[in-house]
Image (spheres, rainbow, N blue to C red):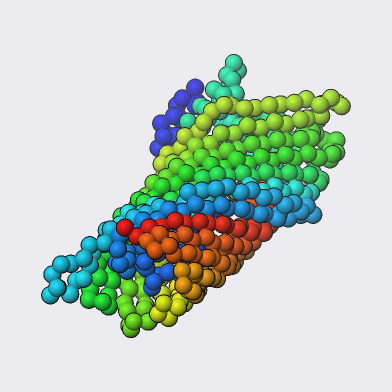
Length: 507
């Protein structure tokens, strides 16, 4: 009866049913070097160059550099290698996949009026994969902190009838009703109580102890994710005389992200005060995220001379609307006078949470390029993005307001440096690049700095070009297992290798 009475209250507080946090915000705010093989070969240092479909995604004035209409397609093979350290445990994993990560076309129109200073106009449309979420890693080690701290965090202060099944009520029915009325936190306490991890002091109490004996715990944690962050770009650009190109991009963003985590914890700890101690916990969580959004870019490229160019671009914030779904299950094994008793709870319920808004930070990019006639070029890009401006919305929501304050205090401005060069010999081009991206965190530990390099080749058949590139990047992250309770972090040294091939045509 009490749950039914509180149903209306649950709807009013629905915005804080699931705890979005800084990790989610950073995941959707970052972007990687994706795009065409030539673009990746120069490590993305294309802001003052243009003349490449992926360069248009950096500086919208780049489409006005094309001398004729252009189309390109790109395939990429990504290989991730992760080395994890969790207390005394070390482990290595790797995975690879092939993606169709870029396609686009630019259409160039020349002004037939010889007296006009506006020489040409370009319209283009492109698809770019901003970030690839395919990844997996495994960690194991011995910890003095148990997963019971996760369930205790959510349970303390809650009445037992808010986190338990009524007589005759199935686990699925109770889990669903508790989620609809009270939210995600109560569901976690429900899993802890019904799996016998939590022990109430009395039947009508709001305080809980753990049936997990203190000591050392062997923990194994598996992480697997798939998905992508992509965008469609609609571009318009123009060239004034032979000196100045100006452009604008309207970007439609979309996110698909799926994550599965599995924790296996066991122990041989002894505590005579616990009648049926928990010896094993197997905890599964899955998350599916879908989102869409909008951003715009404005940019220009100015030719100081035939050889020297400068570029400037402003990327607006991306305004995203995101929805999430989760599923959970838990298994425990408890020792009852020498007999192992299994407790398995799989509600088979998909939690569908309310949509929320996320505003990712804007970015400024300044670019320089020097072109050695037909022999080659060198290019440099510098970008600045202030991650502390990341915001969950609506900002008047108390939970979102608290998370925004955390991000404002924990995140900082991050600079990115990219340099690339190209040498040409007849139809053959040799390319290389280097990039350095600072951590968005003030402590520089949760996500470390990124370094990468690239090497590429291109062959010009005339109106058709074939390009191939290898690029490498690495960084070190600290990944918390859970946002509360069991917050111990896995150190992950990540290395990614990409082989990218593009085919482009002048029309």
